[in-house]
Image (cartoon, rainbow, N blue to C red; front, top):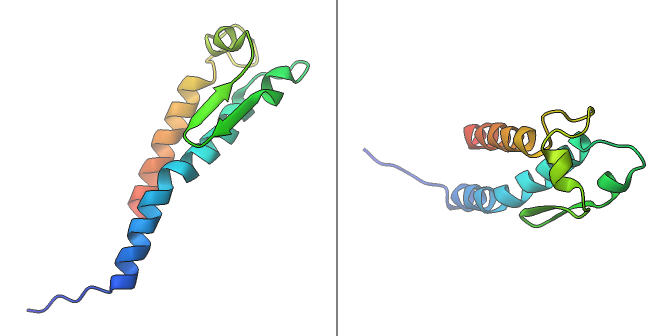
Length: 95
């Protein structure tokens, strides 16, 4: 029995795996921002994704994440973590 491996397909697979964290975090950052309550826009305006970090750069970020706002009673982090888990499962399933 012979097994043949297409080297270009393997390289493409490894490239996809290598890029996955950054792709998922870019989408997770947008998801986090969409879950961020909007009043005057300060919280959403000051939420950014840099590489593998989502940065909520405003003084009351912790309060919003702990359900202080009626617009996000579950906060933003927990739904985003669930989103990341679903997205990674979906992408790994495609590989």
